[in-house]
Image 1 (cartoon, helix red, strand yellow):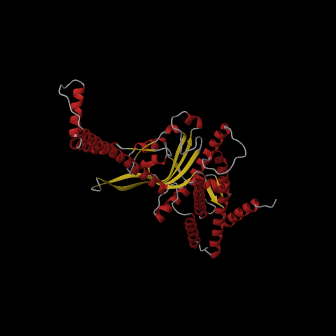
Image 2 (cartoon, rainbow, N blue to C red):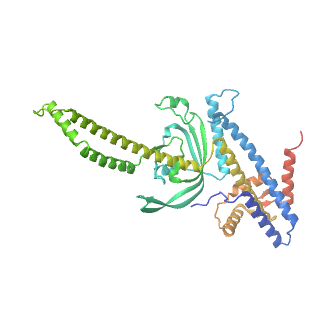
Image 3 (spheres, rainbow, N blue to C red):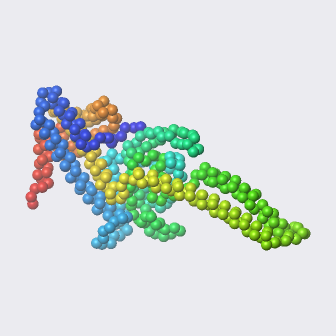
Length: 421
């Protein structure tokens, strides 16, 4: 699988990693001291606080733009919103949400990947159908792509088969429903979602082949194999019922119909006993039909339960709650990237490094030190550090501000933010 931008370590762990790298560098140059460790932790704390403040503003913007079409809001609106204003707000929100997912190192699931996933057989043997006509916009994002192997059991566990599939650690779903006019023109109005609303969901541990179960309008359908099993059982059982329970009744009924339509000259005597026998036979046949229909419904209910159980443990968050989860994820990624880039640049003093050299150094360090292969997002890291004036660019090389000056720069930022009016 291609390397991911996602750094699979906690922010606090990365701070400890960077502190160790800085301490090792100072020790090698006989510069290590307790004060140096304290300064680095102060720098890390100020950097994390500044990034957190920026993402708090972004969270408020997302909540404000999403409020117009959130499906489960519990607050009142001061003024009515026109359809054009609502569409414009949805477009603004879509761009902000995509930017947030990119900051959290999510990748968009391409249309080809989504089509391929919908055509693959589900791992938990449930066939689902999705009506895409209900949607105005559908976008899937994923993070943490890998290959996994699981053992599936067939024929009551007598046969086993190992399958390898694409697995996503996180999947974000962004879906906008069509407006109310569309649903008023179809036969069945939606009962589980609000027309014109936008839903956002976040899931974990989702196989690529099971992406269709994340749609809000997916419906369970019987697979051909399930229909064959039920049909074969019904055919065999029906034959047995016809032969053992309805044989005499069917012969009597056939003779009566033949005489009625002139195909037989000899009359048929319908006695009370024969009518009772025929009634009992038809009752048995009716109960058999009801039993097979119930068996079909119960099998479908089991499939729906498997679907709901699967979603119950995979769902992480919904709608506005997703913002908080993703904001936290994006904030963590930004902090980790900025800390790593600054720490490794700091070792090279005024000489600095090119972006490619810094990128390679960080990736090789992760690979050799922690057996972790990743695609470090160097452009994003350098953009943040330059914006915060912690790194300067000299031609093609980047130079980190000395640690004491970096701490002062971050401290001055907070002094300006909280300057008394």
